[in-house]
Length: 208
Length: 425
Image: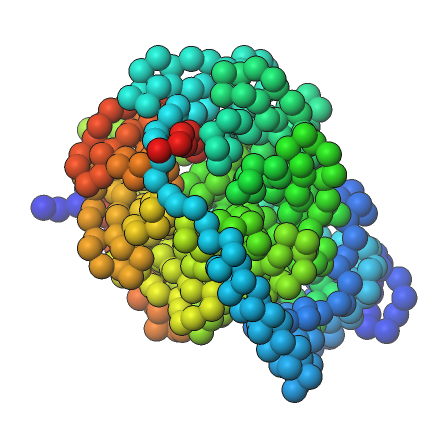
């Protein structure tokens, strides 16, 4: 793999993975350099920025919206927006949080799509968010049963609750980071996370 | 009662909620993305020319550094001009009001356009083709019906105008459909008739961004209006035809309500202090039939709320009665004395709320519906929609007497909103 260091010319197959080898500062500098080049219109720099984050973005989107097709759409739309708007990003160091926030908002918009006023998305093969009733089930639920029940309960939550649960439990982000991503005070993020978890537990109790 | 489920530890939740992308999906996605990137120009560094608070920390805006005395002076001059225009318009072009006689109800069902009589009887099909025809909208005098038609084969959406009996059909505009991995879709296309019925405003993707386009009813002279660097969609004409209100902004997190003249000049945001910088998910703005005031909903602190803004006075007023339930998509009654909106969580049935524009006299109507509501021209009824519990799709129109209960229902599978023909009183 070609390695791109700040100030050097060649972009290879993505940002080098320097995690865990003590090069955090260099990694950050590298990301800033890539952002700077991408905002100047360098598509290969943008590709390197996105490629190294795409797996996580897809996981985030799939976990929130619940199906692959919508998640792909949401991630593609978010990344395109990021590309289009990149010249307006004032602080290069905020690229990742900015990209995440665009993606979160796009996922929430996707989930709300049906009910927004005057918005008519007629997907050819939209995947229904089905939540079939569960039978009596075993006395002690096995892992698969538990997982499926949690997923069904999760799909009954509104987009905001889904989002905050995914950010905390799937992405394992602390409340402080979630507050920044959602643009709310830390206390608000904390209370929303609690409310979302409570809502999930209630929805799960209905899964009998 | 003991739960049958084990404790929801972080690990249990993580394993349950995480959806791993299939192997190879990221490679496919990056290839698709870079093809799209190659076709998508970046926005220039041009900055907004009016006061604008960037919603995103770190998102560049030259408005702030340039917000000097000169800018304020220019803005003040624009405001003065608009006030003067409004005064003249108010005196000379005071809109006619207001109540009309209910005529036909137009709606779409399973991708075709239908009309029914005012009592819901005699439904008849006006279109029948392989395209998805949605969102019929009567002209202000009730003589024409516009609708949108998605053609998956050509990946286009056509704007079509016809008579209310389905004859004299004319295609007046064609725009690209929204590309989705799952197929083409109609997106963000709301049609607004000018008050004189001579023009329509619609939303079209131009150069990668949503823009407002005006076209004559015969299909001639389609032209984009407004600042091409500012996205715009879901335009709404003021009753005197002198202003357009629309949802604008650079992208989702930075959206807001704007007004401009139909020639695209005089753009200014309607985003007073009551709406904080995190407001998002704006609904299409709707003008009061008597002009000057706009109603819209916006999500503040993650709860959708109803606002009425006076263009030339104080505001906005937050009409929402609930601190926790979403309230969205306000619509003015034809006489301008009431507003109706939807209260309830997204994707589930809620209730219609009716209130005076100052938030007083709130009635919550009994039938469970999804919205947005559509008023009858006499202000006596509202149309909402019922949901099929199994699929979550709309499966009927529910017509509600205001302030009474359900009046009648029309079986349909609407993808868009209904429209009620206004006949002369």
